[in-house]
Length: 325
Image 1 (spheres, rainbow, N blue to C red):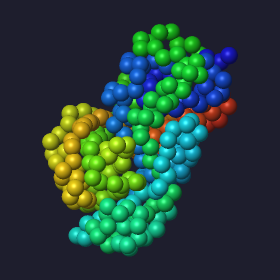
Image 2: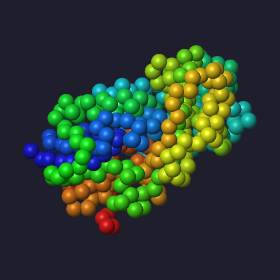
Image 3: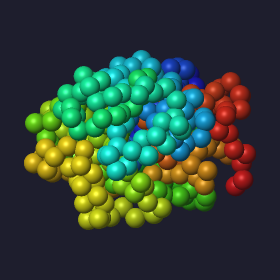
Image 4: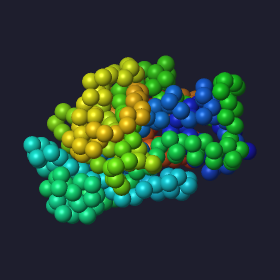
């Protein structure tokens, strides 16, 4: 049996381990904390599988490959909600909605009554919206826990302290891999979790704003995840300014958020390369899988598949970079 080692148990590492198990490999995963948690950047993700919306600023491969993500997560037994994404803008920012519509595909223009039919709690608040119908979302923490449990059931060994690596090694450490990938940088993202049981939203809602764009992702039991800032920094401290901006934008989306319970504030540094696209780098028996930027749950399945194809089929993946070290 082929043996492989995965370093890192965030979304990239767990997806790689899943693809390796599917190939019949005996897999060992090294991670300092054996359970998914706040030390993983992916713990703080929004969980939006939104390739078309990301296409407003992202490169074409993100849109194309991201369309595979929802099916992959469903095949792993993760709960995926496929109700699309709603995009709105305040009246003073109507041009933002027009600009966004020109830059993305796969959307339907809604008037106020059609929006109210989709999301009754937004009734009367916006006279226009976009519905990006083919998008989905998941609970990232539940997804990480599910993969971790399933992999352990399938015989994967999880170890906190690195030991001798057998066979190929897949380095999926994210921002911590700067020692091996010096052009990797951190892009800080901050998030807030609110509990607002009086608000009902059934799909992610993006509120466009020229300075403070917001997305709101519904989770279970009346909880909502608010994001996301994007700051060129690897500083993980939580800033008052960012929280104020997120909460102000949420209040503008719906005033009932002003009565919500503030449950959690989080921040982490997303790993990104200069072009904001991921990379797969092979150096001898080590394959680096990194640079998922803000597209962790969206691109990790495709990147994991490419990394295993490089290892076992000797095919050069789309995001392959030659060894410079």
